[in-house]
Each structure stands twice: as C-alpha cells, then as structure tokens.
Length: 120
Image (cartoon, rainbow, N blue to C red):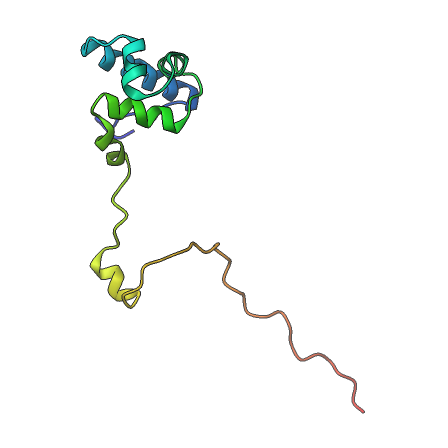
C-alpha cells in the first residue's frame, strides 16, 4: 500500500452513508434545519432525510442540496477536466473524440493457408 494514500471506500452503501453524514454536518455547521434546507434547495423534507441517512436519492436532489449549501460549483472538481491536451489534438488532426470504440483483439496472422488442392 502506498504511504499516506487515502483508502477507497468499500462499497456504494458506505460511500452514500459517508456523503449523507458529511452533508448533515455541513448543514448543521450552517445552523440550518432539514426543513429549511429542503425549502432552500427546492426539494422535499423526506428527500433531505433520505439523502442524509445515506439512502438512495436522486442526482437532482444532491445537486440542489449542494447548491443550497453553496457547494454546487465544487461537484465538478471530483472529475478530471475532459479538455483534450494540445498534443492529442495534433495527433487527432484537430478533431476531438465523439465516441468510444470497443477494444478488439488485433487480428492474428491467418490460420488459413493454401490447401492441398487436388491436381486436376
């Protein structure tokens, strides 16, 4: 294991519980009730309770809550910037990728050979 590395979360449920607990702590640090956060986020109280409990919730609810807590702009920080580097642009002749391709194995040298055709 790499020293000082942050261990990955065990599973989705654990991550959801951790996220919910962190959101609850941020909400409480800002002295907001769940009802008030629901009102400011434009969502329902049960949705806030579900999110903070680490139960399944919608992406829409999460984004609304983050925006209400003034954290909405930070959500994109979890993903690397998808901009293509200039070197890649040159390699792709100025075009950006628009779709992914499935990886296929390189075709091997053919097993086919000129067979023992019968002399005519």
